Every structure is written in structure tokens, then in C-alpha cells.
Image 1: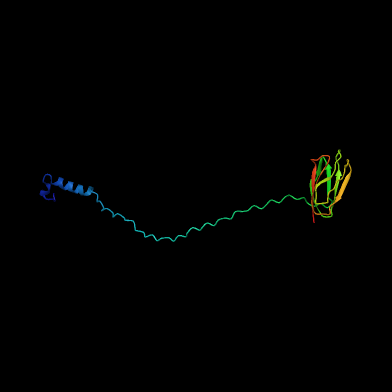
Image 2: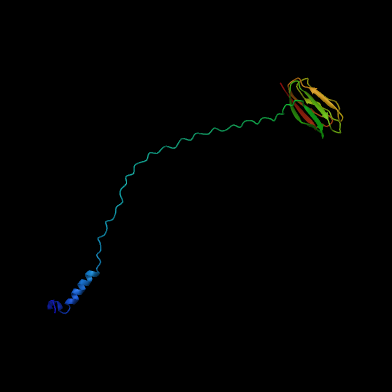
Length: 161
């Protein structure tokens, strides 16, 4: 019945074989450690750099002068005296133009030059409501005038060539 040798049945022999077999079957095979990877050495190639441009100074802007306001020449220059004022207060005309002033105020007024080119003075004398005065300007220049009764009322005629 038995196909094995009696020597294997010695006390402890089976036990020793069993332990040996058991330790072999339970033991895990540990793989050898993987080699540690060394990062490759990268040779860096210098990148050519472009030098920064030299700053160029920006020239300062010189503000242009603001031209003085000028009046627009009128076809038939008319100035109304109303509410103790000349309207418009300043007009521009060309040489040879005749300017007309009309008093639409309830008070009397004058049109009297205060500053003109030499020899070009004028004065309307007193004008009541509804009266007019005209003057032809034959010399180029700036003519300032006022009401001699109400001296805060002023105006300007600019005569060009």
C-alpha cells in the first residue's frame, strides 16, 4: 500500500519537508531592485540675445499759441444798441465797408471812438430810440468805441485790407 520509504516517515521528517515546502511556496520572489535612473545630462546651447534698443528721447511738443478770436466779416454790418449793450460787440469788415448802428433802447446813446488809426475818429452824437448812425471805414485797423453817456458800453470794429 505504501509506495514511499519508511525513512520518510520518521518522526519530524514529514514536518521538516512540509515546512520547507511551505516556506518555498509562501516566500515571494523579490525582484532585484531597478537601477536608479540618472537624468540625462542636457548640454544647453547659449541662445543669442538681442541687445535692448537704445531709448530715443521724445522731443517735447511746443504748444502752438491759441489764436485770438476773430469776428466773421458781415455782408451788411449792422450793430443794434439794446439793453445798454452793442450787439454784436465785435465785428470784422473789409476796407470800404459801411457799418450801421441802430438804437433800439429806450435811453439815448452815442457811438464814439476811443481808439482808432490816426485821423479816423468818429462820434454819432446823441441818438434816441429809433435813430441810426453809419460810418464807412476806409483805413485798415482796429477801431474801439463806446457810448459816452454810458461808458461801460463798448465795442470793436476790425477792418482788414
